Length: 430
Image (cartoon, rainbow, N blue to C red; front, side, top):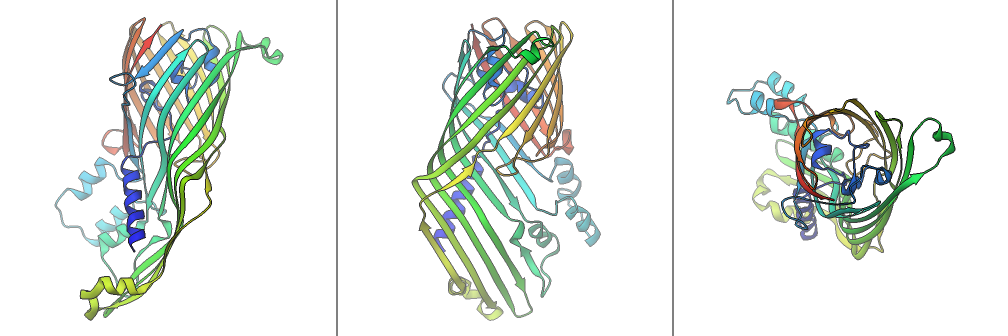
């Protein structure tokens, strides 16, 4: 039992500081992710390295939060069901809930469980010089899912002979990695495109992935069932845990300037991405329990639980690998007026692990320059893990200094949103 308690504590600590392999910055936040063609300089990491070959990149740029080289978090917190509207309408009313009220409330929770995606990103160093860019940042990617049966128990209590909860839909997978990326972009000639575009650039980024920690459930089953005279606990868990790892990933991209008004690009990010775990340690946890606790023995619950443990072991393994999810970005932009730009980006993952989704995310956005130094931005997105997102933001962008802030909501608007994201950043430009 000691090992299991340590493991649960580790999960809680990692979850409480989770941030994601999801390259968020103030501008991309305000554009709801419609950022693939706009990324420039040190902000191209995770978007498209080919953008470094375009003419309007700064000769040098460095991005930071409040102070250079001092990590400043970008925060994104979301879940799959609960919004302020639901909380205010159903939870914080103080009213008596009948069975139908509880059924209506339970219907808000997905059948496959309530998922949490706390995302916080800490960029350590982010700079560009000419056609090159270097970025160093720590990131955690993952998801925590609680089964719907837990909430059914909270609302309706326990019924004799029926499981109080069923843990089959429980899932935890978190991965903490420091990414060191070097990117380069330059102009290229592609004959098939020469007659339809004014300029084509290509780019590549190489990422060294230094693993901090990984924890994940391979299998979780379990239930607790009450009877008039006893409680039956039955469960199994298999999980892996790793400290220290190393991996690699690649970004490849193409960008085109079609004419003075239109641009388009495409990139494949985190190609062949993986992390091999076990440099410090790699362990596998196996735990199973079956016990019957009779009413007269409830006072000795701890001893009965210990006696009911069939397997409680943690042992070292040679190592294991985890995925570093690959995704594709397709971007397009159109200049409507000299001071009005529109953007669109499609994001498609190729797996559904570590907070990624097979469902594509489509983002559209606009940027209006109230003055050359005061851009305002708004964006909307549908699909992906977020299902819906909208963003808004502004900046103070001068010749050698820029400050931007972005805010977005996820899963709905205003009180119906199920999460939010906020980002602030400054840049030095030459």
